[in-house]
Length: 152
Image (cartoon, rainbow, N blue to C red; front, side, top):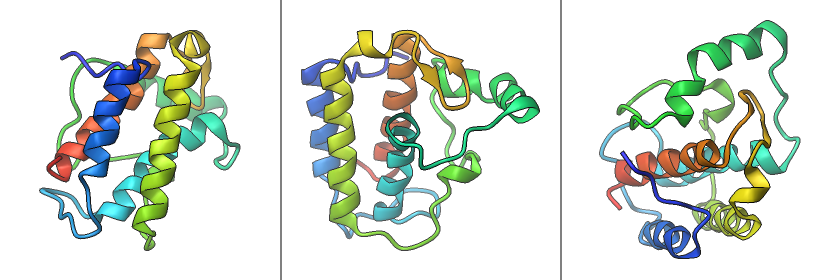
């Protein structure tokens, strides 16, 4: 499956338009997160790139993540509904919808403006260096999965 190219201004905007179609009352088609928690969950992928908020896996833990998770995250197959996520992506507390939505849109815009060449060979938090295509898949596939979860 081809994923939206979030380094393209047009395709990034199409994803932002889907996010803007969400409301605080939007209900999931599956899963346990509410819409604000889902937006916060999606923000974690960008926090791993743009902040030092989350500790980096090291040694054997990083090896195991690369071995068992990398292909499902940056590979072409869509995520399955209700699939497990890494502990740092679990959001169980209440979040503010508008704040999380605005943060996610800002992350998408920043990523698009930096462009794919900025990400070529950039070190991932857990997977080591990724190609521009792998970074795009990581971001685009994850967002699409959760926007489908909430019907937009």
